[in-house]
Length: 375
Image (tube, rainbow, N blue to C red; front, top):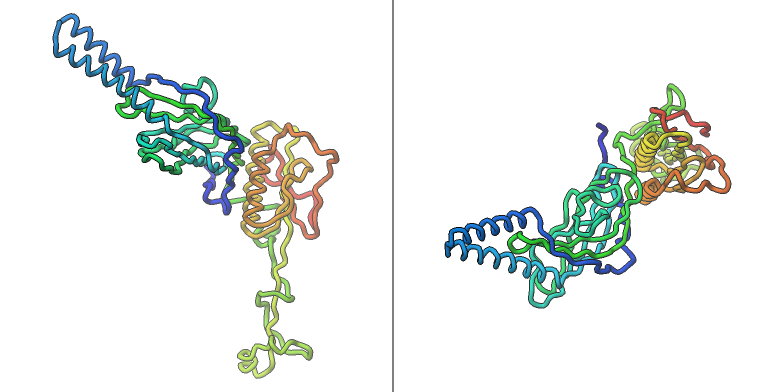
């Protein structure tokens, strides 16, 4: 199985704005879960035994059980009266990685602390169902938990969801629940808080390399090459000729060889790189594989300092750029790209600057195809 990067392995994590709308309360509900059903069943057995045997001790135990049920429902309801929750950040990730969603939790109550609060994202359907399936292409792996929050205070907690497919996964409702204090009854509050999570293709650490010819150099060597000229890099020593800058004289080397030598410098010549994906007439799985290979190649090139342009089916979706910000732009563009998007008004091959290297990925083909043109 190919190695994949984690969100923190990307030079600059893609963090989407939490949401532009104010959270809105949708529903409140009490409902039983398995511990509550077991508790209620035990209470029924107690009352049946007490009635049949006319045993005062069983009647007392049954009364305590009913009292515990009432107290549990009352306290769990009060526990959620003074809580407000909003998303503050959504840290995107690639397929197979964990998306991190951060929440700001406030306790507006003046007297009651919050205890045992669980925060989850709803996946759709009835509002009383917890979000075990996760929204869109996400699966819940770790809910946000607030063990204790004092009156009038706030805290930041985070939930983790596993990304299972590329695209834009919508976020809809937040479910806030508590089984405090006895775990018998569960009280939930549903807050509407629209948002989205970007999931980019799976990234392979190894990256890919072009195949221009049998003796083509590696992509690292082709990205930048030193050339003699004005620059910060040392190139060689040569004899002094009239007109050379006296400051370039290598005095120690001149004394050693008994003639005047000067330092010759070099500059780094960079090659523009174009990652071009062709998806026409390919099934969905082949397209996703091609996008994953294109993302791996683009990140690999950008980490080595090359300027990269990303194009899909003759359409540039990420203009030329370098560095961590370009990695963000490439990954977000791939996350948002859809094969159903309207084609551009004019379809023509992406412009190739001088000395550009083209990395062409064709959906359905295992290796990278030789570039159509490279200068």
